[in-house]
Length: 218
Image (cartoon, rainbow, N blue to C red; front, top):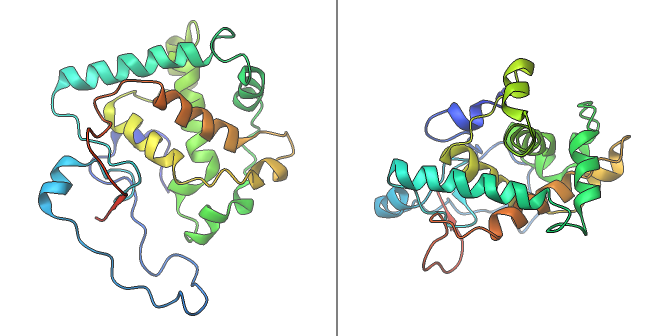
């Protein structure tokens, strides 16, 4: 089982979706051709470190300076996301879902992506949300870094963490079944949408300059 800290520390690909793991599809969709292997030039250019797929075609960062700027802009985006002036429409709902998760995992079996994947940990809705929650608490709130280390909840904000978090946000259908199942009313779909919104506001080097269609492969 993956640990939350693995999103930053584990080298290579965080997880793999084995062909036999997902739930079988009904006919005629059960006859799925083998997945196309990508050219090595694409593999060298596109970040596939979450699960071997890319919904966004994120470009691999090449230098420590680029990575440092990426993290800096992410932290700046967090400040805007948590600001009443910049996010007044959803800030209250966001804070409630960030602060009131009981970690009971009641919601996970309601998630069609998690269950259909064969219970792959990367697709568990609370995995993505808890990583985001820890990043918000550590880098978006006063005294957060000290508290994160004291509570054992530190998550390193490097390029691997942020690219994997962003890709993970596009493994969610935003169906909100998890919110319906949650006894606390925590809305993981809202958190996912706020992750997407946060990254969409940032002029990041990881966004492809020219990209058509989706990229997938190992």
